Image 1 (tube, protein in one colour):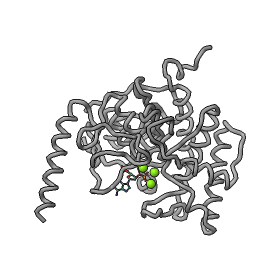
Image 2 (cartoon, protein in one colour):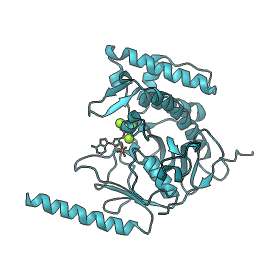
Image 3 (cartoon, rainbow, N blue to C red):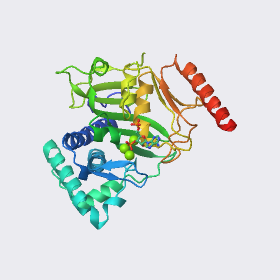
Image 4 (spheres, rainbow, N blue to C red):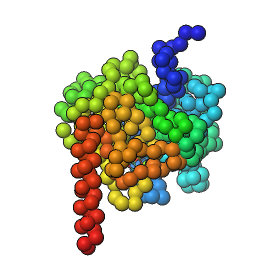
Length: 327
Ligand SMILES: Nc1ncnc2c1ncn2[C@@H]1O[C@H](COP(=O)(O)O)[C@@H](OP(=O)(O)O)[C@H]1O
Ligand SMILES: [Mg+2]
Ligand SMILES: [Mg+2]
Ligand SMILES: [Mg+2]
């Protein structure tokens, strides 16, 4: 049997094609919402972080496409959002808005002849409640990573990874506002440059970037060697193609990182030849459920700089602990 080019030589070819399709469709919904976002589209979660109609809509579309494209596979997904806040009477209007957005996006794409009810939307969102773990396959989804950036009109990413027997084996990062050409970020863009990058990586097969609209993959990625402030895992994508040399994240003590904030981004960087470690130099462990089990801090860089950055971070953390002990 002949295989589609994307499937040939890639043990996760079918999953990769489905993941790209899912992220691209979700990104289409996000782009539309970002263009004319209203205050009423934004809600606040219990942890006081924002969530928008697009975070929910993106989660619904990704879960829908994965199920439609991979009908014979059992489905488990660890995703950021849940439907709790949408089930109250006060949220019925916003739920209707999300349902309309999802259905309009499906119609505009034309791939599926289906229409979702409000209940379908709620259960699709709750399809992301898996606890993951070291056995079996689990999708890992951040429907919008960098929601604050998204609301500001800046960078954000739709980030989808696949965990297989405790290892991230595939990642797709949709970054609708990231110029396709690296130079456009550093030179703050030229009119006419193509905007919207879709990064993808499969274990052992390397990483690629292409236009989010779905052109042929343009180039293989390679991590090479200025600071750029950017929301979301778009940072991992930018690093993977050599726009920067180091990405470091040292959150306040006690903050627990979630798997969906790093799964897709980290495999895109490692498959481009880079490294992603915690502050102690260990690999990130995605097999412990919804949270990452790791020492404080995450560092992504190339293999030459990693030892130097680790040393500097460990010294800085020691100095901070010493200063805290003196207070
Ligand atoms: N106090 C905190 N410290 C570190 N990260 C936090 C945080 N509160 C939220 N986050 C996470 O940081 C992510 C955004 O990362 P960045 O700062 O790189 O854009 C958020 O993802 P979401 O936008 O998906 O909620 C959220 O998960
Ligand atoms: Mg969030
Ligand atoms: Mg996130
Ligand atoms: Mg998010």
